[in-house]
Image (cartoon, rainbow, N blue to C red; front, side, top):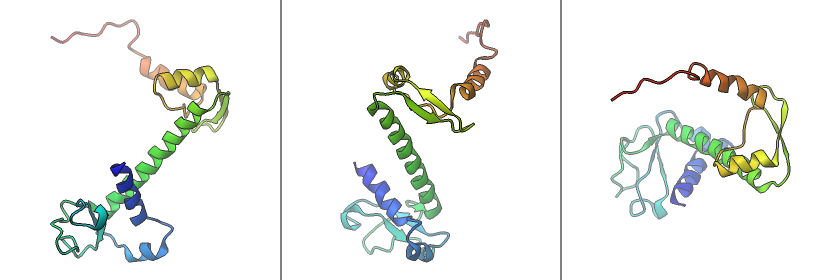
Length: 155
């Protein structure tokens, strides 16, 4: 829960829809991540590039302890992608009927049957993003060279 709230705070600092915030942010700005006693309710603190120490008076945070603003953008993007992947997986688990999914490689629609959904859920796998015809060659390529060959043992 704490991790989620920190990501939400970081996302609020990085909100691309807020033009006023975006105009104020410059390359080299950084975010101080010190805990509760130093920042109000443990909130993240944005610091400008010119500051090497946190702008909060009693905070011991420094640029080295913080996160570069560019890195915070990458964290937010990764969190958004993980959240999208999680919602896609949750949709699969909740559905009790066959699903038609779009392949991310060839954009064709493919059937994701209830039986397949159950298998993916039981094995804690995310819903497939590629259709069977696009998954096949990649799987064959990974398997090639290993079938029928014995691995050398290292002792």
